[in-house]
Amino acid sequence: MCISPGGHLNAYTQNVADDPDRKAGATAIFTEDSLGGDHKQVEHLGPVAGLCWSPDGKYLAFLGHDDPDEVWGTKNAHVWVVDVETGISRDLTPGWDVTAGDLALGEVYGRGDTGPVWESETSLLFVASDRGEVGVYRIGLGGGVPEKITPEGCSEVGVSVAAGKIATLRMTGKDEGAVFVDGKRVSWNLGGFYEKLLFIEPKAFSVGEVPCFALIPEGDGPFPTILYIHGGPHLMYGRWHLFHEYQALAAAGFAVLYPNPRGSKGYGEAWTGAIRDNWGAPAMDDCMACVDYAIAQGWSDPSRLAVMGGSYGGYLTAWIVGHTDRFACAIAERGVYNLQSFGGTTDFVQTDHSYFLSNHTDDTESFRRNSPITYAGNVKTPLLVVHSEGDLRCPVSQGDEYFRAVKRTSSAEVSYLRFGPEASHELSRGGPPDLRIERQKRFHEWLRKHLISDVLCT
Image (tube, rainbow, N blue to C red):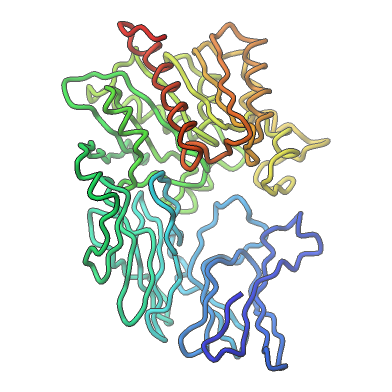
């Protein structure tokens, strides 16, 4: 709920579906006069985030879209405004194939306020994600194509306005992020700790239409290489978002490839939606194109390749090793492996015959076809399955099922690392520090064992 500048109008959101459990995106906006006046419903139905009043109390602004049935995140969120008097809402950036909000993955900062925030009575600021970069944009009430105000060479993942000044949370890929006010840095966290570390500058490149990033160690290649796949699947890797885990791998002598394959955010709705009912094959093709490019550049040793990822990245890791034996080892973490059982156990709302052309009872063909567990018997790659008992998004039963399926039906070496209930789906980014350290130690051991033959692991 938010209160108007005059103090007597309240604005709030409410799910208005007959059965909210079946239609989680059926969100409506209401205004209510606390002095006993009108109670109105705005002419908008769909996801709403960041609801806020204009300084003059004439408008409400928010991030969202107008498709209440779309819950998987394939549709772009835009900046919308509501005329409070008429109750009519409109998209300020129609036709702009960019999504509002910070959709980039990171592990060293809490996401800032992505807006919208009112810069004046006729201008708004908000954060959007475009082609691997996150920035602050300005749009007027007239709408159109917004103006990017974030400078080159960084991402800005949060914005606020006060006393005519603009504050942003800026990332450069070399530290944990800093606050800038009107373009000047005003915060230095951790006493300059990150300035003492030598981070590798990411390489940004494209293979055909596939956008990719890479961390290449110092020295002469080719290097043992890790293909690290992101989750979501409808998120993206950001060029200026620090992953200390990836930097640690590169410092240990591994090249790290991290592409934004089909299904990723930030490259238009068609790119994001290209994996509907086909979760594995298109994204696998894009990831393998990135690997082949790195081999051709002399960065990567084709005999010492690993594939790994978490959540959807765990899914795609399992899919890949069920369809090729090119990798010397793999780590599938907190993944979805059986889509039929996933639908009955996850905390995520699903609708039948929508994103996947199946339901969970009498029409399961699409779930079977898209599930890595279907191809468990094909696995020849040494595989480490990793899951946590506190994971509600991808329940630990997914890891149990997949580990047992590979163990029973394939000849591959397979191990299972199972963390306890204190570890959730966010273990790698926000879990207990001791478990995060233990996780990385186990991963390095597994990778050294299978990619660096002259290192004895105990």
